[in-house]
Image (cartoon, rainbow, N blue to C red; front, side):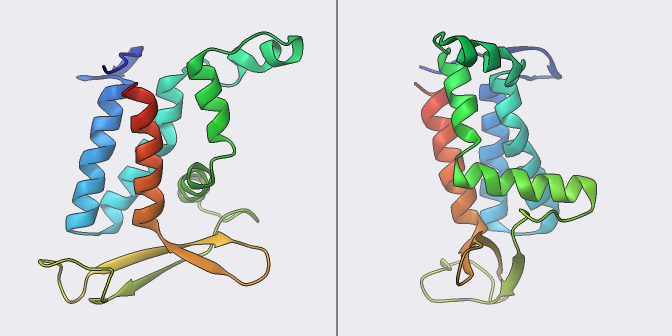
Amino acid sequence: MEKELNMEGGLYELKTATDLLKKAKMEFQELHNSPNEFVLFNLLCTLNHLRDWILPAGHKSYKEKEETGCMLTKEEEFHKSLHTNKNYVIVNSLCNASKHFKKKERTPETHIKCGFFAGKNEAGHSLNYRHYYVEIEKEGNKKFKDLQEVVEELLTDYSNFLDN
């Protein structure tokens, strides 16, 4: 059963967090089929702000509750958990870096590889398929991960929350 978390605002028929998740899934599929920066930008922004659609009041709604030992709602617990979710932190950093036109110390390094790579591509992908990579570790040796994997894992976290 889907949770219907209604927004007072929204945009036309995008009224709930479930609606925004559906938008994110469509953008992810578009990115997978034909990777480009326009779709990537929209997807990162959608995933970054979906947290706000789940809990419009933001962390203010539970900050005092935590200080007094009161129980948090499921929405508040999930919102809080995203602050330490590695995939959300990456998406949030990239989204904010694109919005403010500057990298912060915590902004992960990114790069693009174009080509058809065994184990990374599927039938139908072009020989010049774009792979977006993002740094996932700053300590020691740099490690990079395909951004589509990061996004897919975060989409799964959002889906598991909103669909239960």
